[in-house]
Length: 100
Ligand SMILES: [Zn+2]
Ligand SMILES: [Zn+2]
Image (tube, rainbow, N blue to C red; front, side):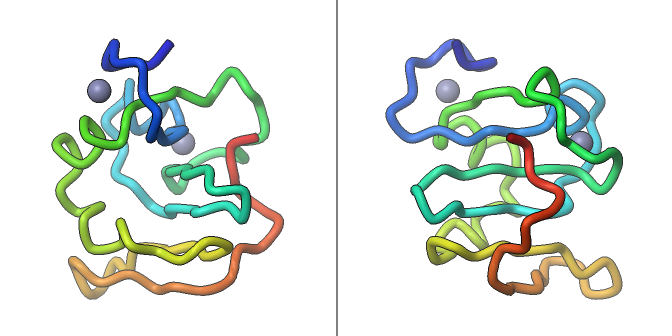
């Protein structure tokens, strides 16, 4: 079940720190299998219990900054550039830091 209550065909997995603690998004992943994930900069995000499911539409509404990377290619990750608000650093996904 998603946190927004929608049965989402298009969904993201977001860490609980963003959804429940109000932490800002730090990195967005578009996995090669098509799955989207978003995590904050805290924690290892290696526990399944840290993952929350939210539908794409609600995520976009709640986090307008995601719009800039909503077209991220599969296999890519985008990380916020703190010194340049609104800008993201895009690179191929590394095998770290994602919610499994
Ligand atoms: Zn987190
Ligand atoms: Zn929703």
